[in-house]
Image 1 (tube, rainbow, N blue to C red):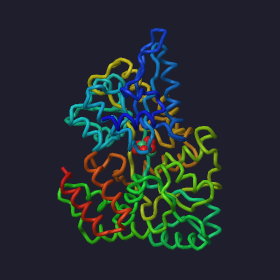
Image 2 (cartoon, rainbow, N blue to C red):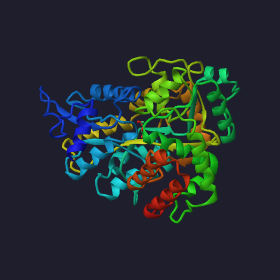
Image 3 (cartoon, rainbow, N blue to C red):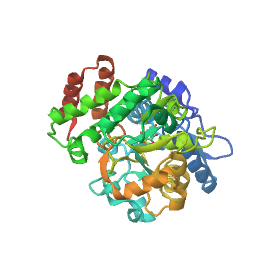
Image 4 (cartoon, protein in one colour):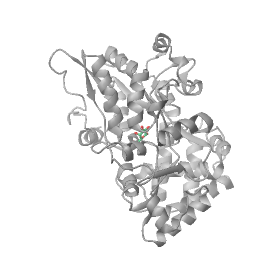
Length: 422
Ligand code: GAL
């Protein structure tokens, strides 16, 4: 517990106290605070949250927003702290969780309140895609408010670095990708930038999808799926080859993405939150020029498939400020809230009736692909596997980074599936 709280204290950005992990007492002026827990503290990430916060504060003058965000991309530190808060029955008023298996875990553990009446009141079933509502429901009850759809399988690249290396276009297949990585290496640039350990699992999911194809990828998460198959071996061998072109691991996803935008590296496979970071004006983002400083394509072999995930906000049982949390959820559910949040976050809205004119450049491509592509669920970001399963996958990938042993990686992934697939 102590170490988890220390993580929060140094990573916070939200002002939690080192001793308790709790927000400071209510601020003056009789306002009640609403503790909103996420991991959107870093460059690019925080911009979207701040945009939604602004609307919340305008619409709810009697509440103050308490930003309980804990730094660390993909929630690698936040989720551990959240778990300890839930166990200690001191939940935040609302927290971010991923639609799919991750959220189902919180629901089954009895951590969340049923939000069906909010859905009825705001007629939300009409505005969210039915397949998304299914991912956040159990036995017909709905447990969270999705704010966005993110895409995991994006290949970001620096056009000038590709040109210099003689790579004419973004690689469409894994073979083309390997050939392009080799050409960049020959020019002395970093072929592929990577960040902390979770970004390697993130890369691996795109390589699994790009090698196996959508149906075989999706089938990996069914009970009894064969992770020891020759196809999975081939996918992991591709992953191993690609990893030989990786640069020095950076601290998190932002510095790895920045190597591409700065022309130090050619490629980075990262979710489309990287778009917010590249594009947003300096302070929050890098203020880089789209198509000149950075460009994008589906990760090799994955064109036509949206490897998706969705951030959603919840109402934990025992929230201190339940009414304040409901007020936050109403903003998160609203067209206005989603249209403020998503263009900054680098995601498309979960709502079907958003103002499409706000989604330009990369985001216009994303909207088009979301409506026409096949779907596959992200591993690293909570759709396809639950938290214990993801922890085992992360551990297997972490060991692989040291050992480079593909056979051991495959066996560990197969064992994780056997232990966790339901
Ligand atoms: C994901 C999350 C995104 C983004 C990313 C990087 O798990 O869904 O919204 O924050 O992590 O931190």
